[in-house]
Image 1 (spheres, one colour):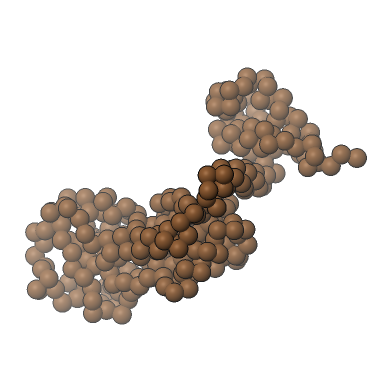
Image 2 (tube, helix red, strand yellow):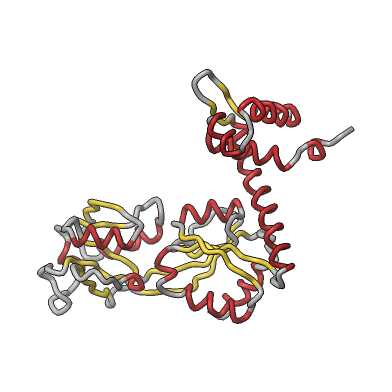
Length: 298
């Protein structure tokens, strides 16, 4: 009896992945350079092998079934492992020994990450790294799918199966319009801004970081009025410049060529923001232990 695994081919996974993402046979078939009928036959063949419907079809739309949603997560990991394996072979034949996928929030690149990458390249010159700037939530998804091997984020609230290590701690800084009446000389505490609007990172993107900012305001007897949200420092700076509110950011981001804003470092408060290295406990990339060994000294 032929097992299911022996009947499956890599093209089945690729056809399924593209259709699952496009949810449109014509668009998917164009991306795959095959006809719609051929794609439909391949998907039906795959469903026949698995003995389950992966898609729900009507005259107007295509959607993933519950089984299809589950299968999609596994297919992403399978295709990623195939890609990594092929890349590693290419690197090996070129005299290199592997690659590691690294995710990061913007402030990591403004603080600890450049030094770590430089040291890693010095210690392991034959291991290449691939960098992706992603928010906390996007990094966790990519780490789970193993499209990333390690992430640098401002959260240690992690699902089961993940490990974290704090690699950097820093102060917060206020972001103000250049013409704001409160200056560095006249600044006493953040309570001076209790009646103003704030622009903060979204709570669902970084709950720990968001709560720290709320707490430093509560310590001065007020809850900030959050008028706008953004995860990108240049966007925040532009909003502040245009009078849409104030913001609180990691001090490592408090640098810009925008002369219409200025910063006040919050040195005399207990709150500090931490950056964490996060990885999946069961990650099998043979290059990851080399990077983790370097983190021991951080």
